[in-house]
Length: 220
Image (cartoon, rainbow, N blue to C red; front, side, top):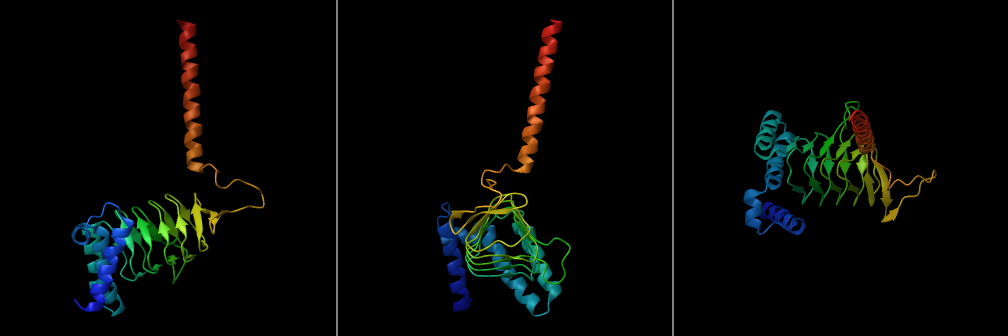
């Protein structure tokens, strides 16, 4: 292994140590962390992809997917010190671009909508965090230092230093400050639509149970 590759591997392992309080040593991270293995396999697959060895590139990426549970298309461009925490269920599409020092949690999809040609997948800037289960879909950019909340579905550009939450995702903070909307809707405390449906169903069940108790009381 040449000095350049040793340096990149060393800084990758250091990034895991900084971001994961459970990480005890670089040796443990190198041997046991699937996110590290997925990135190493991807470097090989991407080199093959760029040199026209498309079948071999895809074979390496599928081998990596089998062993790590992380699917990264060999065409994706990944920057330095990417930390994949846990990693199971992550899917990264062919035209995805990821900057340096990003952090991605399990269950994330960086994918397309099926409507675009050419550039179909998102571009993440530097130091972007994508929470578990988030979906970032389409050929737009997520700016530097942005934060995507767990479970969010992002369908449009997110500015730098912004926090996006919800389904579909909306920016609720920008440069550390709450975003003010013209309609004065409190976006921060807006109820998630799926949670609202669950709450409504729970209320209906409680009302039906109360009616049933009342009927039993009358017939007793």
